[in-house]
Amino acid sequence: MNDVATALGRLEELAIEVPSWAYGNSGTRFKVFGTPGTPRTVQEKIADAAKVHELTGLAPTVALHIPWDKVDDYAALKGYAAGLGVGLGTINSNTFQDDEYKFGSLTSSSDAVRRRAIDHHFECIDIMHQTGSRDLKVWLADGTNYPGQDDMRGRQDRLAESLQEIYARLGEDQRLVLEYKFFEPAFYHTDVPDWGTSYAQTLALGEKAFVCLDTGHHAPGTNIEFIVMQLLRLGKLGSFDFNSRFYADDDLIVGAADPFQLFRIMHEVIRGGGFGSVPGKESGVALMLDQCHNLEEKIPGQIRSVLNVQEMTARALLIDTAALAEAQRTGDVLAANAVFNDAFYTDVRPVLAEWRESRGLPADPLAAFKASGYQKQINEDRVGGQQAGWGA
Image (cartoon, one colour):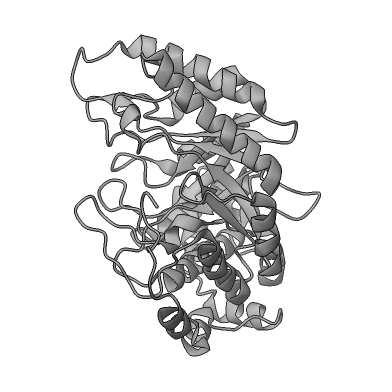
């Protein structure tokens, strides 16, 4: 196995962006449960996200969703976040909740609807200039439910034209990342259903356009780490949305359903040069959570999530790459598989606790949060007003 000290040293490069919406009320299509202490404003969401970073040292930026996180003064919001020790990260557009988008947004056959959707992305880019954000993330609910409902080729053409107009508005240091999802809410066909479609569209746009891979947006049995490898090989993996799925887009805590899958993904990220956020050594691949905490408390859910990514990254860094390469070269199947298993089954939790303590962080961030009284305080303080959630 690789040297533990060397592996832990590389953990300094790990940064995981947390989403503002994870701190609001969210859940299934059938019920969204409210909870005490839920933020009512974007400032309260950022405060909760800052608590996660304070206790873990892993979550230095917060992604915003527009218009859910819309404010009058984004420079002031950036300053507020900085005062709490975090920055503002990816700006996520929303073209899936307005009635006008019933039959599509960037792919719509209506010139007026497409114009509205494009202008919304222009607004997001203007916000990025004020927040200092690098990435504009685009996820589309566009698609159809019935054969013949619309011209699939025409929708791809309109998508390409819309994205080109948005791409042309990006600043020099800004990027567009296009997410994909193989179904839901469109059930006959989805306009961006897979990594190949996202890759084809972003390749046509240019070098500032990349693919966003959501780990929950795949059919059962899909080899996600193969897609990670291929996109890194092609230089088009821009970001992750980390979560877990049992059936479809469940948005559960990352690593909950299949920690070995997360381990394998992180191995390919490291192997392909997609890991690292030290100034001057940025990989260009943003690691972000995209999860819903419907039953569990939200802040502990996010703490658990970033710790899961850290743990599987540490295990992936322990893979004896020299031994693995030799086993692969000689065709020793069992030896190669054993190299993976040896690293995966290594319990890194004690050394990670020591690693945190050596950096002034609590050995057990979840226990530290529970003892801090923060949840009790926000439960008491955040009474009245409208709790944030899907669509708010």
